[in-house]
Length: 196
Image 1 (tube, rainbow, N blue to C red):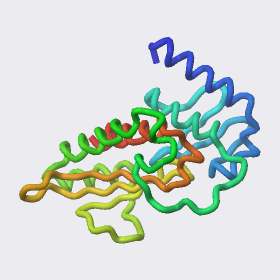
Image 2 (image 1 turned 180 degrees about the vertical axis):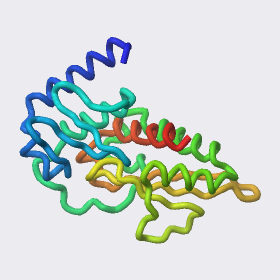
Image 3 (image 1 turned 180 degrees about the horizontal axis):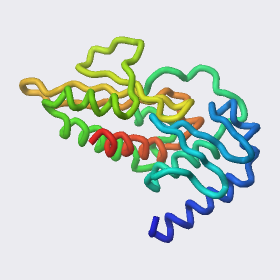
Image 4 (image 1 turned 90 degrees about the vertical axis):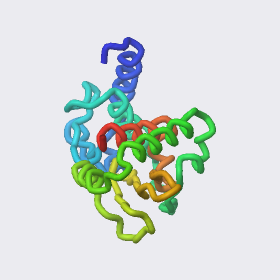
């Protein structure tokens, strides 16, 4: 994290974390907290987060996602909002360039795995994805538990004659209570980098 602005933002988030009573938030977040250290499941790994930093080798963007998840914790659990929606349907999606970036990520994943359904399935398995309980009319469907209250639904249709491969990334509507628009795009980017 050599960029000074990244470090400044990261340090600011850590300072805010230090001012939180994380133990009081653990149920709403689906995490555990012991002596000021939160254990946060993120995809198929667990990371320790405290005011001193984050354990493990994560990109700056992934660290921001973990910190913002802790900072945005709602005081009350949202009721409902478990329907799946694309990035553009979130109320805060118009406040950033995120919709374009989300589309870009989906396009890059589709291009990377065109004609490679078995490889994509292996990559989804390695990242901790599981087939969803609901059946979807797609060549491949996986659900990732990005964070305890933020599942991600990943749908893929391979290329057919006259139609390119297509990827759809969906979040539950209530995800906006736990992550802002910028962080949801960062999660999309995490999927891209780790599926590749």
